[in-house]
Image 1 (cartoon, helix red, strand yellow):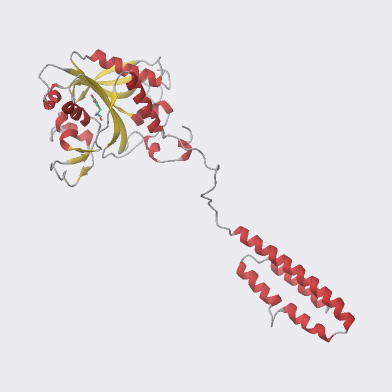
Image 2: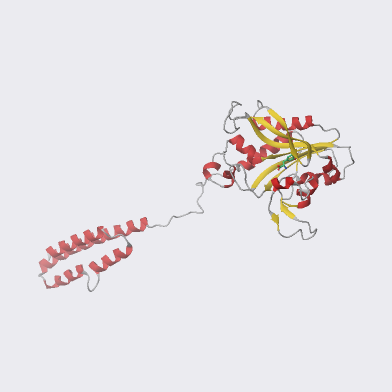
Length: 341
Ligand code: DAH
C-alpha cells in the first residue's frame, strides 16, 4: 500500500505540471480526491482492513501525501488565477496620473494673442458656421469668382432658418472683417483667432480643420508701414529678434495691394535647406490694405478711412516654431508628440 501511495503522489505531481486551466485543475482534484472514484480515497478505503499499528503508520503517511498534493494544487490555482487576472483600473487612485497641459495649438494661440495685446489690439471671436455672404460676398468674392476655388469648403445643407441665408463652415477668419466693420466705428485694432475649415485633400501642409488669426486695423491715415511694423513685431517676438522679413506682392480679393509675408529661414539661417526649399525664406502669412469694396459694403464714407488686414495660420506658426513636420500630427493626439510641450 505504501508503494501505491507513493506512485499516486508521483503521478499526481507530474500531471499537475501540465495543468494550465482551472477546469483541468478541477478535473485533477476529482480524479484523485473524488468521493466515490477518487484514486487516493480508493487506497485509503482499504486501511480499515489493516492491523492497528499498520493502520496508524499508513494513515499518517497517507495524510502526508494528501496534504502535500493539496498544497501543490492550491499553489497551482493561485498561479493560474494571477496569470488570468484582468487589468485593474483604479479610478480612485491618487498621485498616479501625470498632469495635463495645454495643447501646442492653444499654447501658440495664447502666445500670438499676448503679442497683439501688447500692441494694443483687442481680441474678438466669430462664428464657425458662417453665411455665404460674410465668408465670400462681403469680402469681394462673388459666387462665380475664381478665388472661390482656393476656399472650397463644407456647405451646410439647410439655410439659416431665420434669415434663409446659405451657410458654410467658414474657410477663413476673414468674414469677421465685415462683421467688425458693420458693428464698430473706427478707430480700432482687433484680432480674431479661431477654427476654420476647408475641403482639402489633406497632406503634410494641409488640414481640413485648422486655426487662423485674423487681424484688422482701421483708422484715418493707416498705411502699409503700420502693417509692416505690426507684423514685424509679431514675427520677431515669436521667432526671435534677429529674424528678417520680406513683403512680396500677392493677391487676395479683399485687400489692395496684397502682400505675402516671409521670414528668414529659422532652420538653416538662410543657407538653404529642404524646409525653405533652398530659398532661405519661409512664407508665414497673407496681408494687405483693406479693399475699397470692403469698406463700401461696410457702409463707411468713401475715402475717409484706410486700414490693413492680415491672416495667419496658428498651426503653421507652431510647426515652424516647434519644428513639427506634418500638420496632421496636431489632431492625432499622440502622447509622444504632446508630451514634448
Ligand atoms: N483669409 C486668407 C486665407 O485664409 C488670409 C488673409 C490674407 C487674410 C490677406 C487677410 C488678408 O486678412 O488681408 O487665405
